[in-house]
Length: 306
Ligand code: ADP
Ligand code: MG
Image (cartoon, rainbow, N blue to C red; front, side, top):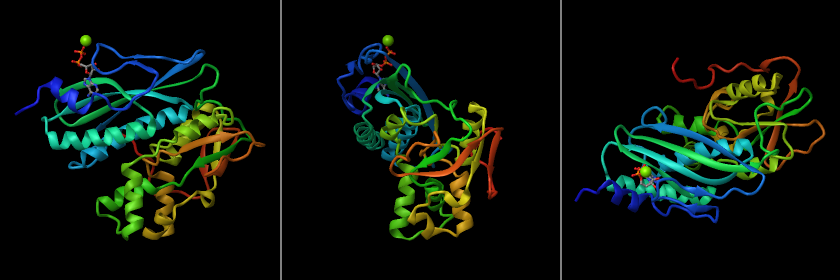
């Protein structure tokens, strides 16, 4: 028997995650969340559309995971502590198998990222998922793209290019062996929002951005918002063992510089401060404008509408 909208919400979207900050969640006209004193609310939203952001026939579990991970990454880039999220779904039909898998992914990523689902909207239409994330940070303490200063160190978390390699493997363009291929495809499907690192960087970094469009493209955003130039050393880019197993060095570099979807943090540190663990210095901030790199990639970062 077909589910009504309310049965569907109750079965798949109610009771996803929990937190003492949620005073009122799914089921009323609006959610009520508690904010610590002297904190601000940080809000960001992201939409994933089938075929544009994920291939048709991607598992519901992976769609949910990716939708929340990419949205949560924006909170990480601001140094926010996770508070909760809203989910707007447009579904072609109430496919209960797909929805059960989607809901399982949602529960897993909600628990991992400490983002209880506090509300949303459910409509019928082409498959599209919008996640709005809510976070908090001290009024004077959140990170922005604007504070980089000449002399700062340019740093990045984790490894670069893995998600682009994973996407290329899952579309059949690149051949990969067992464990390397699995790792790289997971890096695309399960973006790791660096929420803990973002909060630690609040008192360390001068500016931060998450890498969603590709290192060069996002470094350019950081440079223009801060009114500085950025210089990148291609030889310093952190590359995973897996990426080195599936492609030649030129292709690895291309993915690391221009491949989107890494969701690592790119940030600047004052010259004398220590590097946080699992982070690498990849360049520096200079006076001027724009991004320079000692190697030119074959393609620029991802851009819609071109
Ligand atoms: P309203 O008509 O007052 O806007 P709805 O009928 O759209 O409310 O939704 C009923 C309740 O279910 C609300 O609390 C809403 O936030 C929640 N809700 C609806 N769809 C979702 C969803 N996809 N995920 C989480 N909560 C949802
Ligand atoms: Mg209402």
